[in-house]
Length: 201
Image: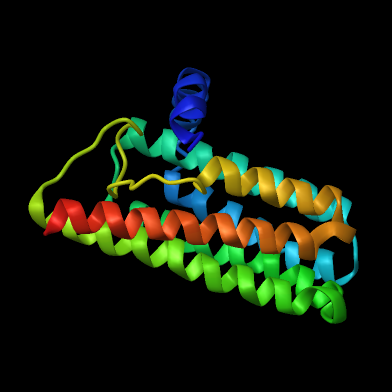
């Protein structure tokens, strides 16, 4: 819901940074893979109950995720880049939630399971429509040039990042926030399925 707002404001500074990185010969996919590898360190951090380190890793991972896309737009987007970006994003999001289950299985495991279940809804409705949109040559450029068609909703990237930051800042409230965000994800899934149905029928 907030992605378009933030994308417009971050587009210019990201592009300037991306141009500098491109001059250094650094490839977009390298940034994607490095950001993912660093981000996955959130699992041992949360297992050790170090939510401050987990928060830092979330912020760095998400910053690199924005940067790799900007670099890709300077260098020229590729199918491999788009594939890696979206796949590793979903793995990272779920890893953070799984990390909270590892940290406190008694209080967090069921809520974490519910939220990952909800992520399956948002992810599958998003990716399945992207396939059909590509097949039908449907384009929507409010989100800028991307490798996949972006079908919006209440829970998009910005909201997910805000949620990940909040649970790292307030880990004792993880279960409550996970159930709440899970409901938001299911509302997003329902609206995406409805929009996809109306578009594709």
